[in-house]
Length: 167
Image 1: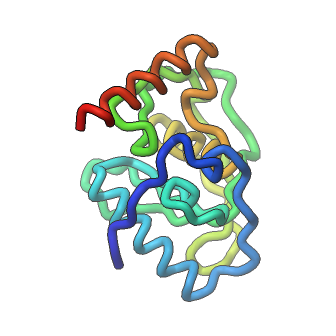
Image 2 (image 1 turned 60 degrees about the vertical axis):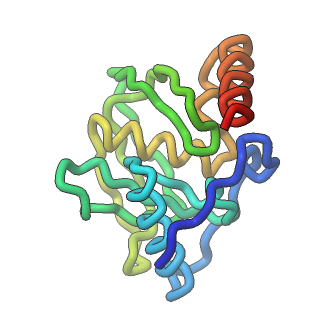
Image 3 (image 1 turned 120 degrees about the horizontal axis):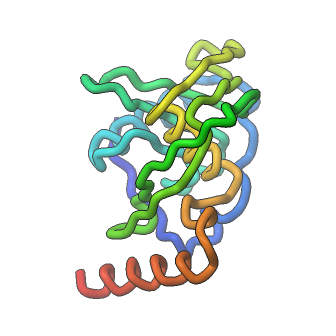
């Protein structure tokens, strides 16, 4: 298990869809373990494989208070989303130093392959739902700033780049 480096926002891999996972193998489980280590080191509440340069539809989410409750997902897809929206400040280690409020459905039902390779449908609410949707966006080649106006997105990307230059 290892903490993996994040690819920068400018990397084209972050802006294209990831490939489906054919089966949950030992290699997939090892990637999930590294993703959890990386998520915990941030610290964060979720991580998608493309954020660390792995172009597979893999995500982990842990919005629990105590931690250690990570849900491992392959090929997650939203089956149902609530009409009630929730605004939450979102950020990404691929675009460090900036964040913005994003409105997303407050609750979602998601279908995915779990760590046993079985299809699972699970309901997520609140921060769990926000994080799952954020990770699915990454798997589709979208970053949270894609939900903002073009001007706001440009400003945040420029601010992040400026912060990175300052070190």
